[in-house]
Image (tube, rainbow, N blue to C red; front, top):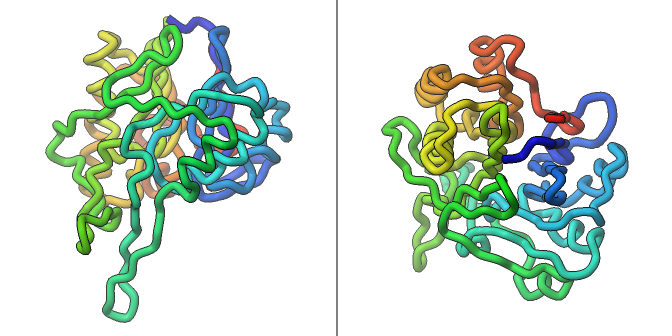
Length: 282
């Protein structure tokens, strides 16, 4: 169980008083067991924002990746160069799968590459030592990567615009690699989402089942609520109300409409998790 914890959002779409925004997500998790970088943003402002908030990327003991999109892995080379030396990089085995975003332009479907923007060999030359997991994995005492999340809710459906290539055809990405960070504290679970492509309720149920803890101290990060329509958004938030929840600091792909619904539902328990947002247990 983690009794002392500080989480600082280093990359996000929006900023507070200081820092720079970019589309993406990264958070530094500081604990007595070590410091963990969860995702790396899009690649522009990770180091600048860390310096702005007095965070030393050389102190990172492990890098943890939520999934293989460029807005979560684009800063990985920068993080490795800042860190220096060899460091474990934890991720799902499908991290490097090619990923694409489909969009309609002039009546035709166009695909934009959205996968990891670096070759594995290059990242390894910078000191990254990849450790892949399918299952729920303890990366430090009381700190877990979710592994593959069972898709059980009928309303948390995949985003058809997020695609992979199967042969010469494109198909909806199942995001088997989507992982969240689950931290067990004496206040309940702290869960960091990358984009929650597996669905926030699926992720929470999985975390509760694996830890036996149903209190939610904090939910932080991207929820993907902003991209899947009002009905799914309403269903996810309605289900979320069933959990004892202290803090919701969702951002990134939550979208403004999703953030407003969370604020309306949870009142002062909601905060927007912009660059510089800090969550602490002492």
